[in-house]
Amino acid sequence: MSAPQQSGGDPARDAGTTRAVITDGLPSQLVDTDPDETQEWLESLDAVVDHAGRGRARYLMLRMLQRSREQQVGVPALRSTDYINTIPPEREPWFPGDEHVERRIRAYIRWNAAIMVHRAQRPGIAVGGHISSYASSASLYEVGFNHFFRGKDHPGGGDQIWFQGHASPGIYARAFLEGRLTEAQLDGFRQEVSHPGGGLSPPTRTRG
Image (cartoon, rainbow, N blue to C red; front, side, top):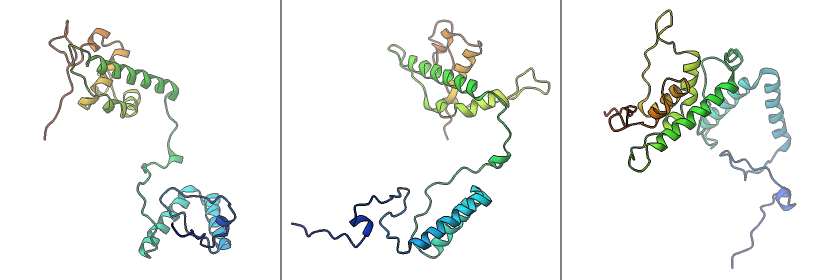
């Protein structure tokens, strides 16, 4: 039989009180030996957020993590960092389009692209295609289509854009919504020769 486990003298645990557990990589078994000092640090952080903003508070916390590593305190390093835009969020202009409408359009295109690839895997065809390439980049492409890319009738000339080959199902699906491709053409994805009336060209692949 194993020896009885000792509580270690933790009053909170001995009293059956639920302890806060930090799950973001910080050790949760450390004992707070000076709750008053801990509260002062927490209040200081709250004061920075209230008076200087979250950006300043984040900077100070990152500097504290850096110094803790220099002092070999043993705090785990960050596993990921936030994406930092060149424009602070408070200076970003208002979105120029209708986010709800554009979100719905993206959903339609993702669905049509997925079904087009699925149809290309049907018995007797079995050529398939790539689904996730466009699904993961649909927002990027749609912002470009709706707000940046210029058509051939633009006064300054149109843009020449090279789309990732594996994302072509989404580009074809968008062209279908615009009325530039038919359902029969979508059903001929990757079947340029075998599909009656011609199909859509497959994605290109570059080998290094």
